[in-house]
Image (cartoon, rainbow, N blue to C red; front, side, top):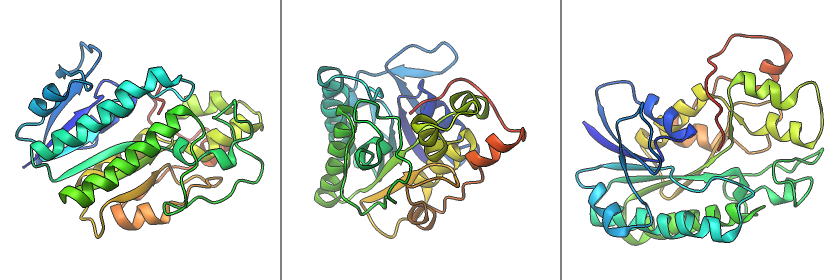
Length: 269
C-alpha cells in the first residue's frame, strides 16, 4: 500500500488526480485550501511550514498541485503559494522521509519563445519551436517564473536529500466540449495554443498515475504533460519513455469530428 498525499485536491487537476488511482494499492490523503463539500479533504495552508510538515506524516508520495495557477497573476499574488509554499512542500517531504514528490510545473515555464504576444501568454506563433525537457527554461509570465523556481528546487532537493522528484509540465486541461468552445472554428494564436497544449481528463489521469508510480531510471525528471496532439510542440517521447505514459487523445480528432468522450467541469492548469 502506497500512501499518496495530494495538495490542491479541490482544483481541476486535483480532481483528476483523485480518479487516477482507482485500485486498492494506493491510499489517498487529500488537502485543499478552499472548502469543497463533495470532497473529504483536510484544509491546509501551504505557506504554514509546520502545518505542512505535520500533514505529510506517514505519507510516501506527495503530488503537489496547490498553487496560484493564473498566468496573469502579479508577483505579489504568486510568491506566497508558489515560492514559500513550494519550499514548505519540499521541506515537509524531507522531514517525513518521503519517497517521491511530483511537482506540478507548467508549460508556461518554457513558453516565451513560442508565445505570439508577451502580453498574451496563452498564444502560439505560427511555426513554434520544438521544446524538449532538457532545453533551457523560458518562462512567459511571473507564474512561469515560479514554475522554473519549483523545478530548480526539485532538482536541488532530489540531489541534496536523495528522494525522487518528477517536475511535471502540465498543459491545458480541458474537456472536449471546452476545447471545441476555445477553438470554435477559428485559427488564431489562441486556438493554436489550445490545440497544442490540450490535456484531456483521461490522459491527465494516466499522466499523474505514471508520475506517482512509475519506476524511474533518473531523478530529478522533467516531463511534459499534454495529450497526443498532432500540433504539439512540447516533446512527449521523453515522458512516454520515463513514465510509461500512453496518451490516447488528440485535439485534432476532437475538433474534426464529434467523437464521444468524457466531459466534465471546466478544467484549467
